Length: 347
Image (cartoon, rainbow, N blue to C red; front, side, top):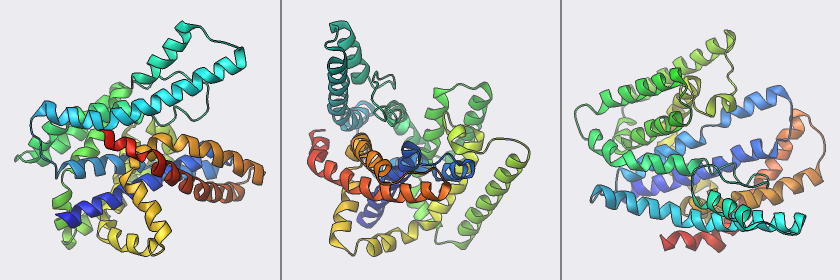
């Protein structure tokens, strides 16, 4: 049990690092080359992985009453978020005061409440500040149904329910219900994460391994066919809100990730041979919420530095800039986690 939980923590660390990779590629916007932008969209599997890890973590937790479960998880995310929100609202209000010499109380109140209410409607003119917080209301909605998902997971209809959930998502996509697509889509990956203990056992069975490779092959073939028939396969376009194409892509990506789970600890041991690297990675594992929220401050510094160091818009330069930006951003995020991570303990 302890070993499995440790592997989940490491998966969370890898997921958070991958978030930084993705935001380096997109927030930095280091190249306008069309092929570069298409290829970088295939890195966008960080949130399915995050919600899979959420499900895996909750598969080991005890649900002592529905309201107690929801209260604990809401407190765990909302207290750190509200601290972050106050900082962002203050920064936004302060910027207006500096630029305009003052601000109306009504405007300041609107900005403050837009940040305190986690509804993805935050008011600010500061770049990057709101680009990741869409995750918060989606997570809060998914939390509401995790106890139900856990109960269904223990029944005989567990696999049938997964099929029904996917069918429901497909139906919602047909009607283009927007934000609801986010909740149902990420509920799918949370539910799959609840099978974590079984997946660890199944992955030892070659039949399951072959099944995942078959799913990967069929999904990849489907994406190629869709591309050749004129459907856009830029995953940034298909992610907001997630649609059927993004689901196919996510299934392919997550199948490969699940195949790699037995090697997570080996990969961790190799990259963490240097003590400093280990400390940084452990911060990404244990303070992932802090890093997720405050990464914007790291990127505000790192992206500006990269643009001052290099100029040019080619695909090759885009790759070089992205690599440099990533290696600047990661230690800054770790430092922020070291300084502010204890806020998570308040919850």
